[in-house]
Figure 1 (tube, one colour):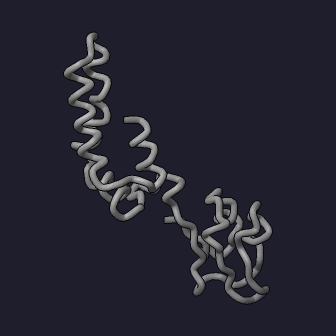
Figure 2: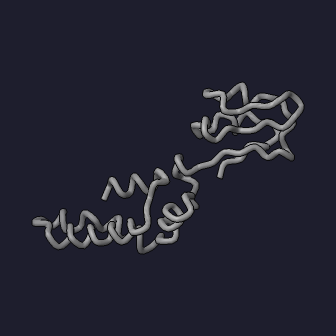
Figure 3: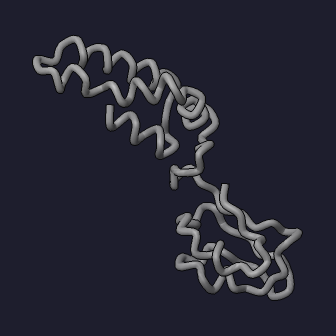
Length: 130
C-alpha cells in the first residue's frame, strides 16, 4: 500500500490504484491475526472515503489540489509581473531560470527542482507555485 501511495504522490499514479488500495485494505483486515493488523489499513481507507477527489486529481490530472506534493508542484513566472531584475535567476541553485535584464524571465521546468528559493526573492510577486 505504501508503494502505491508513494507512486500517487510522485505523480506516477495509475487508473485502478484506488481500487487496488481498497482491495489490499480488505485483504489485510480480513487476514491479519492481531487487532493492530486488522486496523492497519483504516487510515488509507478513511482518506479515500473522505478525499477521493484528491486521489483522482493526483492520478488523472497529475496535480495536487492541496499543493502539498512537491513532485506535483509547478513554479511559474507571470510574464506580466516580471520586470527582469534577475534576482530569481541568481537565487536558483540549479540555473533553471533564464532571461535578459529588463525582460521577463522564464523557468525551465525540466531543470527546476521545485525548491521555491526563487519565490521569496522576487520583489514583484511574479513567481507563483501551483
